[in-house]
Image (cartoon, rainbow, N blue to C red; front, side):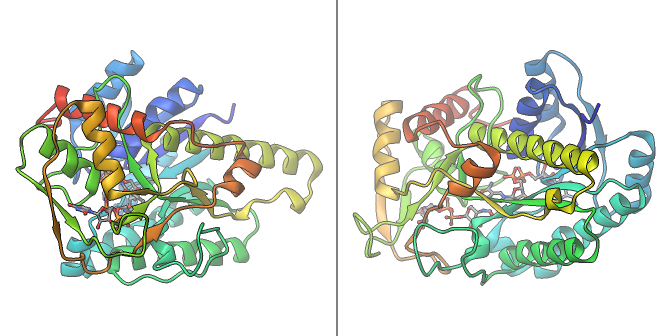
Length: 351
Ligand code: NAD
Ligand code: WQD
């Protein structure tokens, strides 16, 4: 059965939620993570939630020898590749670290995959590859351009995957371009656990609401948007996790047809797909919903625009619906409720 999946970065925020969704969908998972931005406790909690231990290997995607051992020991159908560093500001300060980890790491992983003839990959790309979009909603054919090393590292990997698909049509490569993932598992047991003061909006709001931070700075109130604040396509991490299951189902279906008919029409090649809701929500709208569902005040003040930010960003989610049969189901209210439950139950994250 084509059901064993290697999940790199599976101990992280999106990875843990996806592990649960994969398990529920009947996939067998092996998690490979160097714990640089996560913890064993996250793995323990996922194991508790699914009611069985997870196979976990502590390792780095740049460690080809260890990866080879893992591939030799398992018969993987596909890799879901979450492992990567993701802080935009840090990437500006430490570009070599980001290119080494995200780009060289992915090349090493792809080389080992090729050696073991595992040629199916779902990759964590990002709406950041679209830079400042010319038109909204953003579809997959929109121009790509990035201004920071984090975004460049995602774009570089996309280019590598494109070239790989051209070189050899037995590769099936799906970069999923996530918009703004937020929320947490319904149990409140797993969620986003930023190391320091959060950079992203939702964890910042949650920490203000729970009293760990005093006040939110809203970066800019003079954007050409509904209320002057930035507009984003927030997507619940549980919906995002289901998007990965849908991508694997799609791969399985195409590959079976291909094997059966021996027809390259069924090759997947390089197939980028947006995972977003298709709806934009402003910073002020998100704060207001969060306050209502949590019953907590979220004090804020307006501050100047953050360098590199754009006014509005939301997806065209049509391709995901058409090809994968996937669409986001959860609302902004769900996202706020679930982020709040996680924050309240685990005010110090996994620590
Ligand atoms: P995360 O930091 O919680 O998870 C990433 C995981 O990868 C962590 O557990 C980390 O320890 C691991 N990791 C990092 N470098 C590694 C390496 N060299 N070898 C092995 N493991 C390594 O981040 P996340 O929010 O779950 O994001 C997952 C992926 O999705 C990342 O690639 C990120 O760039 C991408 N992404 C995230 C967002 C977002 O806003 N969260 C948006 C778009 C894309
Ligand atoms: C959202 C809005 C801010 C914090 C980032 C990465 C992107 C992707 C997702 C990985 C903006 C405003 C924020 C705060 C604020 N990650 N804001 N006060 O910037 O859309 O995307 O995460 O791929 O690459 O760039 O998300 O949550 O940081 O910001 O006013 O304290 O909230 O200005 O308008 P962003 P975000």
